Image (cartoon, rainbow, N blue to C red; front, side, top):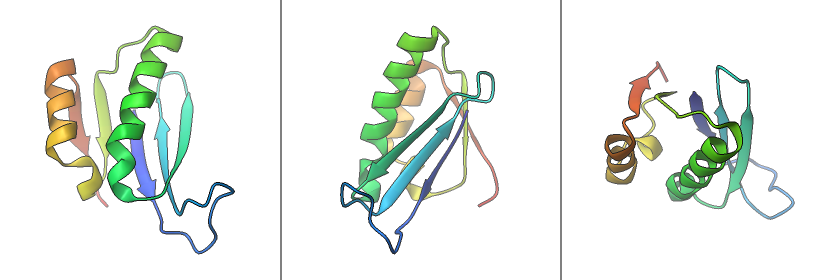
Length: 93
């Protein structure tokens, strides 16, 4: 699974948000795109995606790849990864 956060964008979304989070499952090619008002909402959005993905697809997430963006390197993400047994890989920015 790959995830990335983009923004701020010059043009706001229809909901008035200026950041976006993109999550792609390599196996099923399932894609989730979420719009955020602030970068710190990334964890909340990933938690929602994680639960929805496992319920809908019946797959467990075993590995995630992201760049070294600080939005994915914090205590909330580390705690979830440890609790769920997810390995976090990093790619170049």
